[in-house]
Each structure stands twice: as structure tokens, then as C-alpha cells.
Image (cartoon, rainbow, N blue to C red; front, side, top):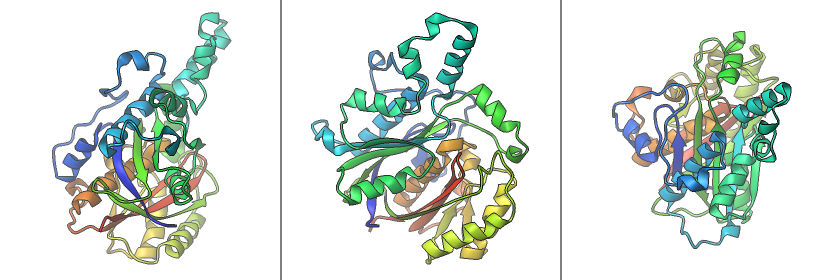
Length: 340
């Protein structure tokens, strides 16, 4: 894979709601944590968001943040701007609301407008409608949006791709996940991270997407408890795909039993002296968007050449391997490198 470059970041999380917040975290600034539904501001006029569900609004505002951060020209050919998003559970709140209205026989809630907001790709649709984007567009239910976006850019299917993941707060969904024994130890939170990718580096580039790798675990590890056989699976994938030891690894560790499985595999591949950091200590377990949130933090760290002290102080950082799991059992990895 030829490298592609991350030029802009838009984020909504419990501890950061802008690229500037991420930079402050890297520089050792104080961190404030929100719980439940995260409060965020929008540069998009409220009139334009009035038909958006909260799920779609999270995507729209984060995408707008990435657009501004990357300085994507307003007059750029909209057919050359792509949108590749992923999610674990989609518009969960709209789905629950719509389902309840059907069960309770409330016709006012069963409108086409409400129903259209229940589909997972409604977030992509709203971002494209709001901005007039007409390029390649996909919503992945799991999988690696960075890998797919890099493939599209390498094949000249777009000049810029807004790539990211969206996961909204849902009390019923989060409570259900936390009821599983395999999820014990983690804190489920909402979070959205969208980045602007280009095929060529620029003065705004945070880092390059150097390479990716993935494997299919037997099941989703935070609902179904996996055994130690996964250690060899992860080791084989990581060691075979990334022969050079990165300066740091941003793991998917979240306080559950799976932390030990992943750490044992990574230490087999890179040794015990490599710095292993867990961004979910900051973001919480954000289900389908944790991988992209970790990647966004890695971008900010590589831009400044150091790790945030809260995750393990380290200077002269030139490469970070980011790992993550999704809700269908994929284990994804991306190697990000500082721009030279």
C-alpha cells in the first residue's frame, strides 16, 4: 500500500471535542471528562441540522471539524470528495424509539422521516447532503475505514476522503453491553472521530498511514469471552505485517479480560520493552469507534513527536501502531508514521 496522509481531525469524545483538545492532551494539559451524552458545539447552522438525528449530527459536526482542520476548499470538486464511515450499532436511539412506537401503535412516530433516521448509513447521507459531496461513499458495519479509504485513494477514486467512525450514547444499548460478563471492567462511552485523508502530503499533514492489517477473531470479545487461542492469531497477524518495532503501540485495552490476551500477543511480537499505551483510559470503551479515536490521538502525538504523559511519557516518537476491535469480531491495526 502506498502511504496516504491525514490532514484534518474532527472529534467528539468525553475528553476532547476538537483537534485543539487532542493537542492539549498531548502537551500535558488538564483533562476534563464528561459522562453520558457529550455536549458539543457546531459550526453548522442549526437550521441545517434540524432534520438530523443526534447520531447523524455527531457525524456531521465531526466531519465539519475535519474539513476545517484540513482546510478543504469550498470550491473543490464535490465528486472527488469521499465519505467512508463505520459504526458498531448505528442509529441506536432512533431504532429504539421507532421500535417502541411500532409496538405501542403510535402512528406519529412511524413517519418516513423518523424511519429514514434508523438506518446506519443515515449519518453518511446527511454529511453528503449538508456539504454536497458526491464522491465514493460507504458505511461499514465493522471493518477498517482507514484501510478502505487508503485503497480508494491509492486507486485515484478520490482526492480527499472523510474517514471515521460514529457511536452515539444509548442508555439501553450501553446497559445491555455492560450486562455481559466479558465486558466487566470497562466503561462504555459514546465517541466519534473523523479524519480527512489525502494521497499527497501537505504542510497540514499530521502523519502518514503507512500500512494496515486485520484478522477475524472468532467473536466480538466484549460480548463473547474468547480463549488464549487468539494470542497466536494476533501474534501471527501483527508480526507478519509489521516486522519493524514501532516506537509505541496504542492498544485496545479497556479493563476487561481481553487486555491480557492482546498484551501477551503484542509482547511476543514486539517485546516487553516497547511502550504500550491504552487510549481507552481517556476515551472509555466506545464500541465501534474506539479504533478511530485512538488513531486520532496518535495523529496528534506524531504531529508533536511525543506521547501524552498520561499514557506514558516518551519523546521522539516517529511511529505508532494503533489496534482496535469492532463489534463483528475484526481485530484491526494501522501503522502511523510521522511526516518527514
